[in-house]
Length: 273
Image (cartoon, rainbow, N blue to C red; front, side):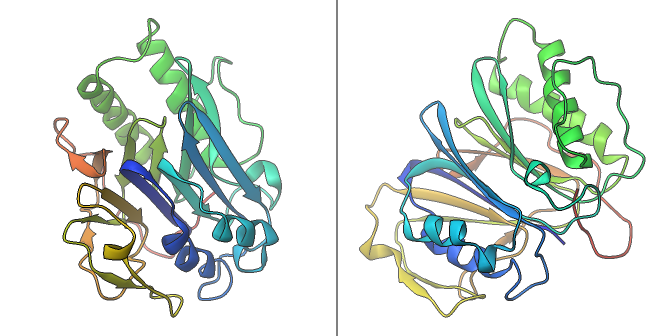
């Protein structure tokens, strides 16, 4: 299946360690060779790096891995294509403006027969079901809240409702952020970990790399990392129940109301548009 990676923190943090293991899944330790991308929020701005070639062989990925960009929210994606050819415009994450902020979205799954009617506020540039779902999500939110961004519990309920509706068409794991918080929707497979004091060492599954976070952090730091499958083999990751929308703020999950959506129960390997 395609690979998702998200990070939400209470202080700007680099994602170099997690990205080192994540990058290897793009053609080295896994079969996903159809492109990759990563978005870093910095204030109201976004640094977005996309490459339609495998992340394990991408010079752009090496640049990102060696350049410690500090961010409160990060979304990354490694693609295994099902809908849409392997080109730059079909590479996740996707970015759009809504209510005066950039929103970034990445999807893992396959939405069969998903063909919503768009009014034109948001239009896909590529051919993927993923970008189409993102445009539908953004358009629905703008139409529902024309005066601007609603309170977070209201927004959470709206995203949950839309995710449930889209998820009726197939597997709809996704990450979504506007730089202030991170939504993580699990339809079939997603896990997370919250790193906070007392910090310890972590070892990657996909690379022989160990980091002692106690040497790199302060007592008040808190970092939540979300991934399709756990990135480390010596930490206790929490598996998100399929059919659940989660919200991460300041490096930890928060309760914003009922979280149930729809779980994907189909069989076979998952890919993404």
